[in-house]
Amino acid sequence: MVDVTPQQNGPGISVRPPMAEFAATVALMGLGLLVLSSTVLSTPLWSIMAFGICVGLVSVGLRGGYPHTVFGLCNTVTLGRAALLSVLFGALFEVNAVSAWVVFWLALVILALDGVDGWLARRSRLKSAFGARFDMETDAALGALLALWLLISGKTGAEILVLGFMRYGFVLAGMFWPALRADLPESMRRKTICVVQIAALIALVFPLLPAGLVTPIAVAAAAVLAMSFAVDTIWLVRHRK
Image (tube, helix red, strand yellow):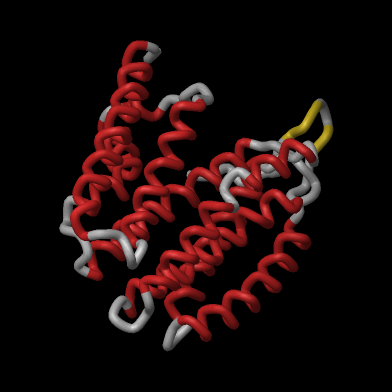
């Protein structure tokens, strides 16, 4: 159950989430998504549905504990990344019709914008747990969608799902192992390996990548990612309460 009451920002002070600004941003973003997905895909239906689900989840997050009165450019950038992700989701249903170049460039733009939202949040003093989680889930979704595209397109086998879905496996394990649900301290190692993971998946999508490099890149990236999750798991187990 999610607590959607406005967050208390101090004694007697309640911060109302910026739902009007968010709604206006969603409307403009949705219009842009409709144009882009209609251009890239034969139908924008799946992309619009995916973006709608994302908007619903973000809305719950804003109501449940966002500590600022403005949505901000930082969260707008993350929402833009999510909108582009929605196009990638739609592309999964048209793998044979959508060029690998389209998937490659969309993913590259989404990756390039990673970090921009965090920098904007710090610069505008709009840092929040909500924003950090929004950014993290966007990164995780990008990895999962790229892995699915690689599998469906036939460029790799099912083993690529290990690289794309490892975080979701970690979350699933946490449902049965409570120690894994605790918060982790910030880690540059974790952030760097996340970038390596996404960069490897994008490299695998690259249409001109020699076939002989597909397996080495996938295996190396999966090994590094697995090591990172192992380090986090050991830390959580040692510090469990």
